[in-house]
Length: 66
Image 1 (cartoon, rainbow, N blue to C red):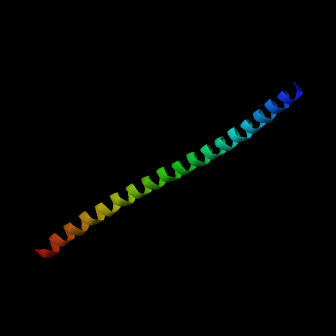
Image 2: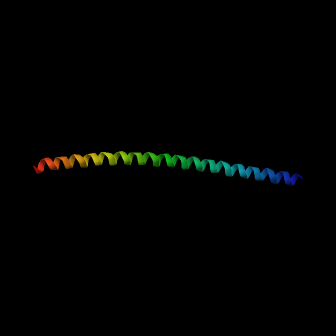
Image 3: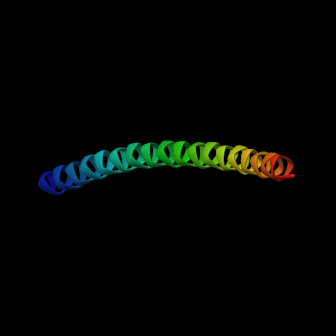
């Protein structure tokens, strides 16, 4: 009986360690996803600014071509 209790306790301890590691990995993944999302937002903003600059340059080129 004692051996069974020890086996169960060991299995529970190992499962707890695996669960903690999984939780840590998920937190790391969530942090990485948040960083990626922020980077995509920054890229989108930069693309908007570049698009505006291209429009301004086109308008200047039309004025200069007259």
